[in-house]
Length: 237
Image 1: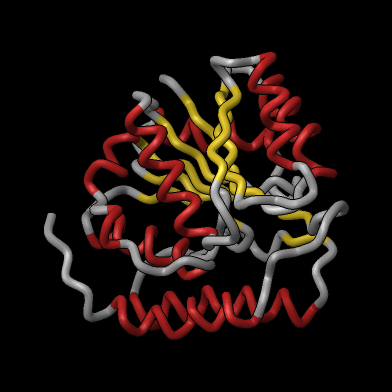
Image 2: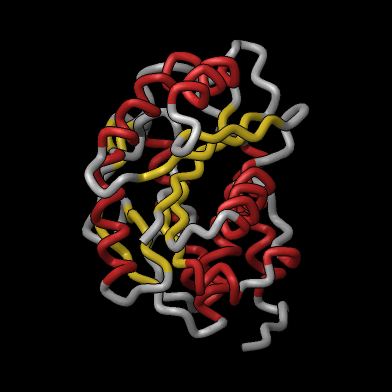
C-alpha cells in the first residue's frame, strides 16, 4: 500500500524540517506532499531542499497566496490519486497531531475502514494546552454537527484523517465547497452519506509549540452555518 501524507503550510518554517524528518523516519514508508500557500518565511524553500535529497518521497506544490485549507487538501488528493497512492492522509504541520499515530490510522484502512479519523473526543476529551474557551467551542461544534446531521462521529472537525483511494474516488471532490474547518465536516459527512465506513481512533491532540495558530472566528462560522446546508445536499451512491 502506497501511503501519502498531505500537509498544507503557511509560515511553518519552525516546524517543517522536524516534521519532514519525522515522517520519513516512520516504519512503512510514508511519502510526503507539502501544499504551501506562498509562505513568506521560507517554508517552501526548506521543502524544496528536502525534495532534492529525497526526490521520490518529498514533494512540493507551491500556490500563490492563502487559498484555504480545504482547497489545499483537495489539490493534494487530486495529486495523490494521479500519482497512484492507495492511502492519503491529512495532518497539521505543527505536531498537534502525533505523526506516530499515522500508522494506527493506516492500519484501520487496511482493516477495512474507508475513512480513519484521529479523534479528540471519541473517548472523553483528549486535548492538551488549549484554553477552555477554544476547547468548549470545538467540543460543542462537534456535538452540534452530530445533532444537525445525524452523523455518528464525535470529532467532526478533526483534521487528522486518512482516506482510502477507493473512498476519494467515490467522493465527487469537485462538489466539496467549504474551505476552512467546514471542509473537514463536509468530507466526513459526504463519505458517510455515500455509505462509506468511517472509523474513529482516539488520539491526544497537543497545541502547537512553534509558530502561530491559523484559527479564526470566520473559520468556525463557515463550519457552523455550512452544516445547515449539508442537510439539503443530494448524494448519489
